[in-house]
View 1 (cartoon, rainbow, N blue to C red):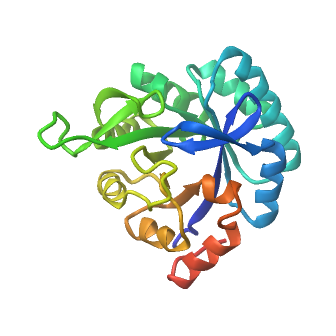
View 2: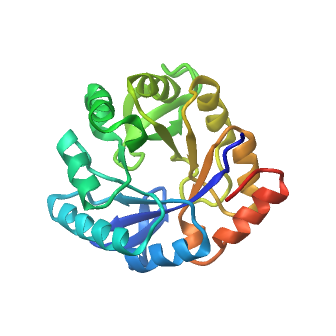
Length: 256
């Protein structure tokens, strides 16, 4: 049986508000996260992803409260990430109401964290967030894509495809594949990046970064994405969840 393609709005949360910019800069306020989550649930979103982009200690308490409030009112799976650095952080988020937890920088610093989380909670809980960007020809990465941190501003010194493979072997349940060059541009998903990761891992791949028009979504699935994630186009009403699902269905892909 072919699994339905999931459509996932992403809410970047900073100081308790949803924000959106281009390449993580020039952030604009996009509303209250709980209210937006309720709208997306009603519109038929398959899941929601919350990323605490401030990830400060003050922000962490705010995020916990937002997760709890959202989980009380929304009944689709909720993935939460941003500043997750330990098994204890994952435990707290799951207790607050998250269904899955995304890890990024902490896993790069200490890859065994992936195995520790998967061993304790099951790999279905663990989403590895990979912020990948293209590198100039002749660089040290084999694939032409490197992993970045700090919103795409710093190189992590790892090949993005090799890191996805390593994390999958350690126990990651899904890859949230963020194309940093495309983030917020609305010029389309990075299909090369999706194809390269899909060729090397068997776990689900969530395509993120670059969605701007309805016709951008089917090619991402054709390239190998199991789910498509977008933020700006949903938050500012450019596209609706239902429109994306209709477009995918018209292209021959199963949707819920």
